[in-house]
Image 1 (cartoon, rainbow, N blue to C red):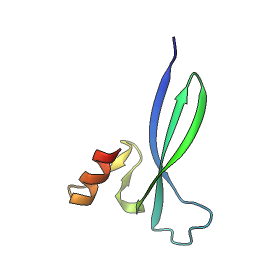
Image 2 (cartoon, rainbow, N blue to C red):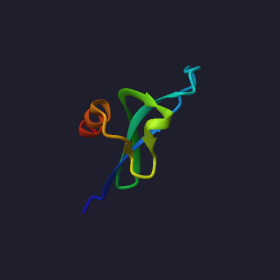
Image 3 (spheres, one colour):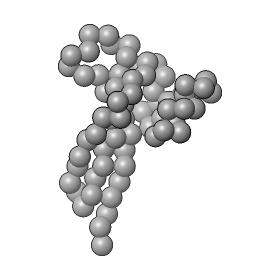
Image 4 (cartoon, rainbow, N blue to C red):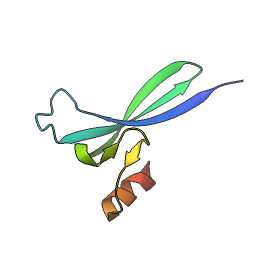
Length: 69
């Protein structure tokens, strides 16, 4: 039986000089083996809720990103 998990998270990249913008990633773990994939989306640092793994707020952008995730 395989086990898997998904984790959505955001992080600042090395080449990004703007600390107010972070990139969103997904980590897929299958049987203990991890793989990280960029979603290709960016958000403001203040809008990310790392505990819930989604964008906070009720704006159309937040709803769109959360739906995408």
